[in-house]
Length: 52
Length: 241
Image 1 (cartoon, rainbow over the protein chains, first blue to last red):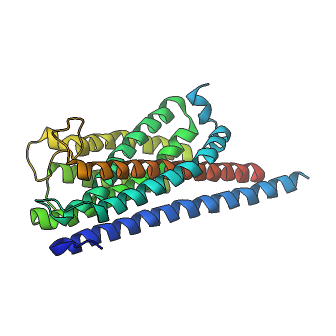
Image 2 (image 1 turned 135 degrees about the vertical axis):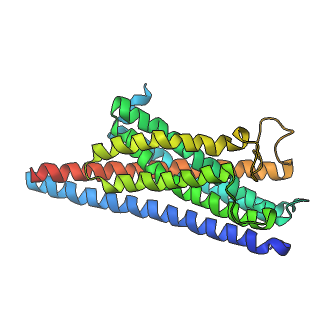
């Protein structure tokens, strides 16, 4: 860990909040994509089943 | 071969499905290496001390925040002129990334400003235009959420995007337009005399590459989500009809 001196709070807070927001964004985008894919697959299966 | 063929959702899903994994790995590598390099291996600045390490997040996030809006402007104009759904869905997907990057830039700017300027916030031209850009992002997302008909939502959000572009331009060039305020000029420039020292410059370039790649990956994944949601709605409507 580098010696951040008297600015440790500013630097660590910047990195902490930013990484939390960016990781949260990645999780949000990926989970939303998985949910949409599963929902579409279920609807397509239902529609195809209805045709048979 | 034409760019417009990717306005076809099936072709877009096929191509994006192939390139997203590679871009995601490149983005993760660039971000991990650049942030490690910047945080652990670069010295303190003679004026700013260790707060210079904030530059590796602040500058790339601000750059992505502004350019995401320009990308949204282009895709919104394509929607208004050519009515390609993939285009406007890409704009919607980019807005989620843009709003988070704008917030990251505002937060890191405040944490840097407090020790350097003696204040968390100032009504400086660049900071103010950036805050307004953030509000435009929120308004854009709220407008999509608030209108049931997707084509009407696409039309209205596209118009909002055009209006908000004024503030995206101001965010980028406010320092040049008004020779006042606390915010300094660009940290990066083609003129070598103007940009930061090489010891900070190279990890910063890599961090920018990582953030831009992350934006592309998340926007592509988000667009895939929007296309699937749209298809699911269409199938449901057809089966009920």
